[in-house]
Each structure stands twice: as structure tokens, then as C-alpha cells.
Image (tube, rainbow, N blue to C red; front, top):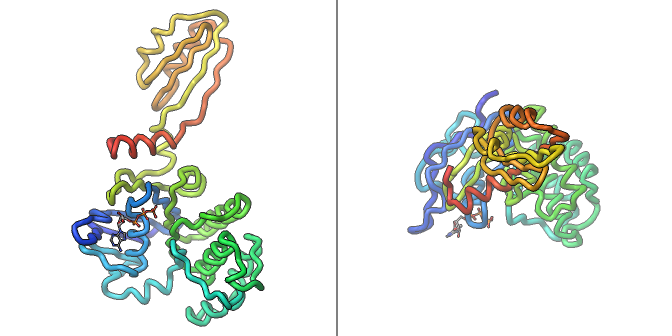
Length: 298
Ligand SMILES: Nc1ncnc2c1ncn2[C@@H]1O[C@H](COP(=O)(O)OP(=O)(O)OP(=O)(O)O)[C@@H](O)[C@H]1O
């Protein structure tokens, strides 16, 4: 699939403070990219740069093969955006907003937007000022997709959505990508990124410290295997297996935390009087925390 979003050395300084440093990113059609990071990491800065709401100090942004610095209007027509600080017109209803955005974008078809509003259980007849925070956010999401954009850039799109609406939004995002759409969204919540993104980037203090497919991160994550034996065993043999990081023995139960393939470990266990084995899915939260606490060590 073609590269839709491409940045090189993208840098934004606020005075002497570097909000974003040397960001190199490529996101393709059909991909959902999750940008993860703690408060102040540079997620919103990245999104605002991509929307041409602020200008880079250095570096390039190429969207749909065109340099954003040359012509941002054309690119922005093909983009949808959920800003972090959503502004709505208090007196207008959801339906009024749809019509207004349709006119501004010269895209009169409201079918997509109405269908998404229905999926998210958003009442389009209510005025914006009457909407709860979550329902305002739903309207923001609906407006971002109203004109069937080729690229959506979403700042914490699921914040404030109830669990059901989040699920519905995530499946919509997956369908959008399956149909060739490209999405970049920010989140603090790893489980959200894990569920919906193909790739994840971890931003820390303005630097992208990881950029990987979710499946690759999971492969790198530690998996916990619990072996139950017919009688207590000597756990020393497990410690010698490649990839094993931790062994805890408690009588006839041995728990091992292992990185990468588990075949060798299982073979060692199978030579003993093995009764049962269970495996726990690797926890991405730990990887994320490793980056955050270890300040980006790989
Ligand atoms: N207009 C501004 N002037 C000065 N500093 C700014 C400005 N906007 C952002 N910053 C700083 O840039 C850094 C990155 O901010 P940014 O809003 O991109 O973080 P974020 O990852 O989106 O955080 P959060 O999760 O809290 O929304 C922060 O240190 C912030 O204080």
C-alpha cells in the first residue's frame, strides 16, 4: 500500500523547549497507527503539525505525496481531524453541524455521517450545548469522517466515550482502514492502541523511542508459562533455557517468564512429570512502562 503520511526530521521547538524532535514516520493506506505517550510527550504537537495548525521548526511533512509546506489546502481536503480541544457551535444541533461541515467541505452526502452517528448512538437533533462531554466527542468523531477522508488524524478520539461507544468506534476505525483509509490517533491508553492499531509509536519527551507493529512488540514481550508437575522438581534446568528471564518455583508449580519462542522451555518441562501447562498472553503494558520508566532503553 502507498505511503500516505511521511515525515522526516520533523521538529517543533517552543522557545528553548523541544516539543518534538526529529520525528521520522511513514504510515500507509490501510494502516491504523497509534501514537502513545505520557502527558507532554508531544502527541498533540505532532497532530497539530500534520493538520498544518502549527508550523515545524525543522523537517518535512509529505501527505499524499505532496509537501505540506507547498500546498496544505489540497491535503487538508482529504483529511479528517478530531482535535484535542474540540470546539462546537453551542446553538447548533448535531444535524446543523453536519450540514455546515458538508457545505464547507463541498461534500453534500451526509449518509456516512448519519450512519456513524447512529452506530455511536448520538442524537443529532440536540443542540451542542445540551450534549454531555462524551456525546460532544461523538459528534467530533462523526464530523471527522463526514466527507470520507483518506487520512484521519485523531487526538485522543475515544476520550470520554462510554465502553460501548468506544467498541463501536474501534470497529468503525478497523472497517475504515480495511477499506483503504489511513488513520493516526493518539492515546494514553495502551489497551486501546493494542486493540485497534496495526502499529504503535511511543513518544517520550518529544522523541519517538519505539515504532513497531503490535505483533512485533508482543513477540518481544515476556510471556508467562506456568508448569504444574506431579511432584516438586528442580527448577535450575529452566533457568538455563535461552530467553528465560525469571523462574519462580513453588513446590510442584514452576512459573517462568520468557521472551521469544517457548519451544525449548516446553521441551525441558516435558522431560519431567508434567501434568499441566498454561500460558499468559504477553503484557504490552510492561513494555510501555519499560520505555517510560527506563526512559527509552530498548
Ligand atoms: N503553545 C505552546 N507553547 C509552549 N509549549 C508548548 C505549547 N504547546 C505544547 N507545549 C509543550 O510541548 C510539549 C508537548 O506537548 P503536547 O501537547 O504535544 O503533549 P501531549 O503528548 O499531547 O500531552 P497530553 O497527553 O498531556 O495531551 C509539552 O512539554 C508542552 O508543555
